[in-house]
Length: 104
Image (tube, rainbow, N blue to C red; front, side, top):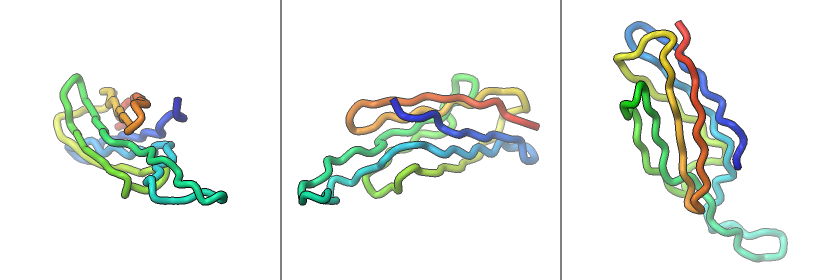
């Protein structure tokens, strides 16, 4: 399983701002290794974020996203102390879910 995501969430005015750093190799399937063999594609395909069971972000990604991707988004209707849950699924079926508490 991949390393935990680093998630920071904080209130800025009436919106929650969430910053996520994901640990993933994000191989495109086009690069070759030192022996000349193609490195198989391995990348995050789906990213979701929920707040109190409500989806606040749903994204579909492809191989063009960089290694260890960074994501920032904001949403309304949150308050300090609430939880934000971020999940991803890659093209090989690997999954990761982590959560953070929204700071004031």
